[in-house]
Image 1 (tube, one colour):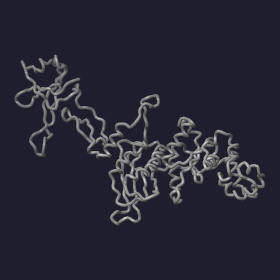
Image 2 (cartoon, rainbow, N blue to C red):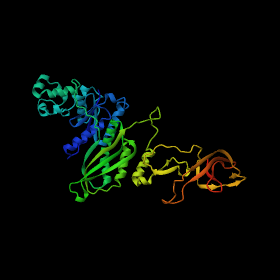
Image 3 (cartoon, helix red, strand yellow):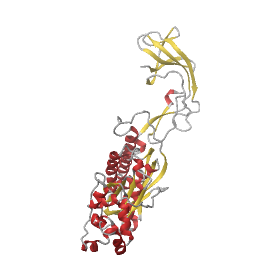
Image 4 (cartoon, rainbow, N blue to C red):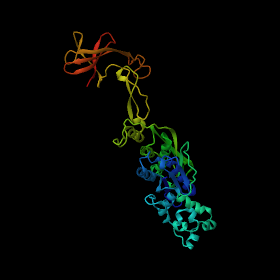
Length: 436
């Protein structure tokens, strides 16, 4: 077996409720590494033997837990063949409990690293016991009668002689985490630092559920000395274009939104909820790991820009079902999810469109552009838009078109996209686009 014991940083003055919430948040985050997670006294223990292959081996898993756990205030992660031994090494400040035989390593540990032994520290010290090895060398019968069976049971479990029993944590159906701030905050951007810890918890919860989020809300409570006009608190909802559990991206979006937020009073407590969660199906187009792509995707960059300057100022082209080429594309906010559509026109489309059609000269009923044009493809008739009013409502001018489109070849200009205007009494030819 391989166990990890996680200890959080201690904060002077923190309330027991605060410490308990932080510990449960760490346990929820740890469920992404293994379903066997338990809270033992002031630590979270994880049985990770079955998860090593999934996360790339012992070394890589230890490094990920150490780095990613730092976001939640992880002070130390110790490793050992049993959970109590891992907890003992963590309390002693030793991360590696695997480099030496377990008995040798534990025998040298002080009495305080195991709670059941440390409770009798003064009595054991008076009879000359300074380490766990000294206690193990005492007669078991005498130890049991003098100190109770709990002491021997804890020793046997730590050394792997007796089976350990844990109450496993389960993954909550919904995510909600609370954090009591160490000091009052007056400016909204200052909430970003503390909010990152809650976001890290949420991303761990999402990873354990193999899910992603596209909306989450940061809530805050005002200080008790607030004015009546300030109210009890406030909230900020952040949305993403796609479901994700990328901590860096979610934190950047939250930071951008907090920069535009004003607090009505000092804040002493924050909480985070995941509003819209769905299973996240991760796909790869390659048989090999994606180690080439680095940095942020275009979608993530656009979401950050929209959060900074407003979604109405970040637009993208969207295809529409319209045969009129001028109106086959509209501009909509980039963060809006649009259905995938294809152009309604099936004939070849030009690479460049002219700002407005250019009327062509005609010679012997054949259009001219740097010489006589040779028709290659066509006609493709477009007759549409009689219902589409131009300008103010009630205007008589419409966007109605009646055109026959052709792909024509110019001896000097190459392939061109032209049309014959059929509206009105006089027929006219126009150049509308140029092919690359």
